[in-house]
Image 1: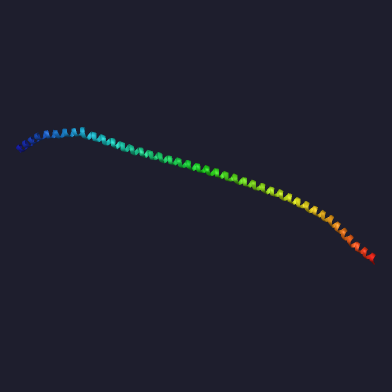
Image 2 (image 1 turned 60 degrees about the vertical axis):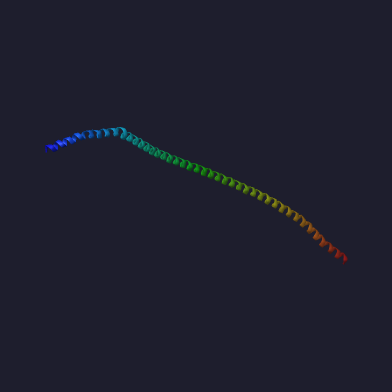
Length: 154
């Protein structure tokens, strides 16, 4: 058993330089390879994450702008509709005023025509009265004259 322990000690003594070399290789790889790699990966992650956050912020800003534009568009449409409605009411009131004016002018013309017709009727009545008197006198004279002639002839 001593010999086994002695051989085991020899193996351990021969393995120490290998162990130290593996340990030094581990430290060297950490310093030279893994730390720069971790640093590069961290930077890449930060850049990627930063880009994601920036794109999310840009998307949020874009959505906000879209909402603002839509609100402005709705307001502009409402303004246009209101202006159209106002113009429509104004046109309707103008048409109503013009129609009222036309009715009044037609009433005036009707009254004037009625007055003219009334005057013409009165004038015609007066002329008929005068002419009827003249005709009556002529009829009376013509009726009277033949009877005078007949009486003279008899």
